Amino acid sequence: MKPAHLPRVALLLLLAALWPGLAASAAECPRVAVLADIHFKAGDAKKLRAVDDLNDWPGLDLTVVLGDIVARRGTPEEYAQAREFVERIKGPRVLVAGNHEYMYADAEQDGKTPWGSPELRREKLERFRRELGAPQLRQARELGGYLLLFLSADAVDGTTLTELSPQSLDWLARTLRDHPATPTLIFFHAPLKGTLENYAPKINNKDRVAQPADALDAILRKNAQVIAWVSGHTHTKPDNPSFLSDVNRYEGRVANVHTPPYKGGAPWTNVFTLCPDKVTVKTWDHAARQWAPGLERVIPTVR
Image (tube, rainbow, N blue to C red; front, side):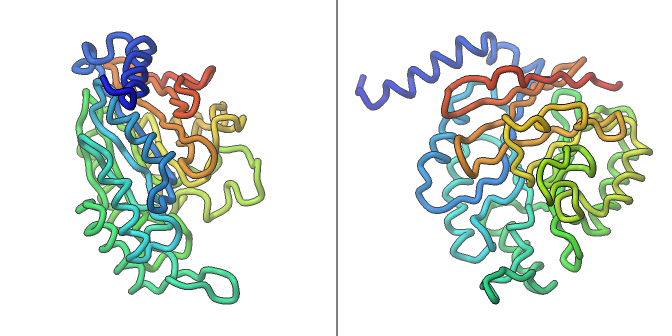
């Protein structure tokens, strides 16, 4: 065996020890890896190594990337670079668009990056679909007895950073109405309003939460089968008290699971295990090669 292969073999042995029975139980309890806020630039070895870790995990059924995959503005050059990251992911994957995929103009003005016109936003969403192999801006999948709904920020004439279009809101309401008894997880770039403490000046403002907040609230109140909302956007890291806190529970019912950023510091990945009676969420620290201690959470299943 070549010496260069030893670190990868060591990781596989470590995973086998830390995650016993993973492959054997995958059929009963599918596993979904969730990552967010990549902000990828060409050749970022740390982030690519993290993807290699995911590729080596046994029993992983799906990888979800929750937006802000491109570096900053969604230019053709940035999308070409982001494709390196996306294509590194082996196995099934789902991508959703965040604000950096489509919201911004291509150049700064007076030291700031202005928002793009509706026409430019529409063009960039099409670029997201074409360049990253993400043909759908919204989709539903059934996995392990759960309904997984994936939504991109797509309001081309919106007035906030992470906003759903009327078409996406209608699709969400209709899809939930058609599956009233199936426990459901919703994946979107931004969190629900009020599911973080105000640990920074912009947290919980209109541009840091899923919009339109009132319309989403009305939909969630009508659909008790929604057990989790999975988000990124705020770059909330595992050492932040808000990362796992009672405040994460929207209206006392829907668990908002915040995904750590790949940008800045060591990458982290959240892993969801979908068992018949519960969803377990753990956070993998790619630098330390271990599960982040004290951060496992269990979301009871509503059936």
